[in-house]
Length: 330
Image (cartoon, rainbow, N blue to C red; front, side, top):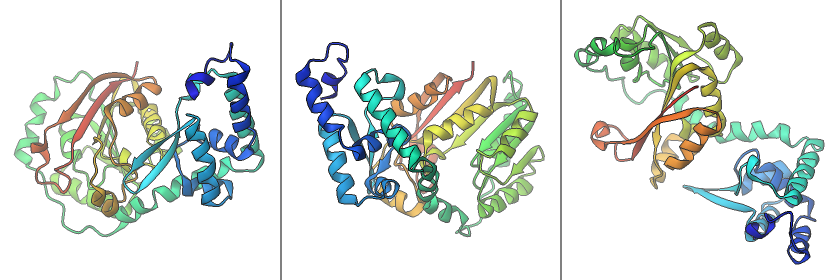
């Protein structure tokens, strides 16, 4: 098992022989190298390696039996994942094996195909958000949100906020009264049209919009011109992302030193109907999982809490547990 393999300096011959046998298969080396980049389903690995799913399943089964792979079930999907972070693996045999797998993947042009797999993951999500809205937007209670102006002065840094994945702009009603300038980023034309409509209806004059993927260089340049954001918000966004950890890294990039990243998303749940209807890639995130993503990009966690369901009882997903994490950039 992995615990035995990690005793690398004094590893007895009896422990190394099974490991060498396991890693003699080039396909297993490639799989070990691939899962250092992302978690993948058997179908995705099959596509990347150009091998049949039964062949890939056999190889992942051997790696799981040896304790080198684990699985993560997300509704109808099962992801194969590494059991360690890149910086945690100190076994020289495994490190050499992964390096060799990486070399083979690079030579075969496989790594350049990962983005295609990630795009395909998000295809159902994109289709959902690009469809015409099923109902008109509901204008928020203007008297209630107007009261936020009274508390704005209590915030030390409120010059510029960025809302990532704004959707129909629901969170803008909260951000606009508090911050001097707000940038709403949304890649879906249908959702952006709804967002613009809300901005006009509610008179959110300090909100500017950007229809683009938030990872684009144009968006980063626009934020950089402001010196970074005091606050970057992302509500119920990560569940739609092919790679949540990379999304967190990109959002952290927008935050100015001393600024904050605010993430709101589901805790783990089992409502597959939400996943199917709305194209969710992930069925929520464990609190420790979300913390790890944030800490890995160098942010300091200030608070993490579970929101009461009473705040969302009128929403389609009001029955799902919601968490909010706030982190500061040093």
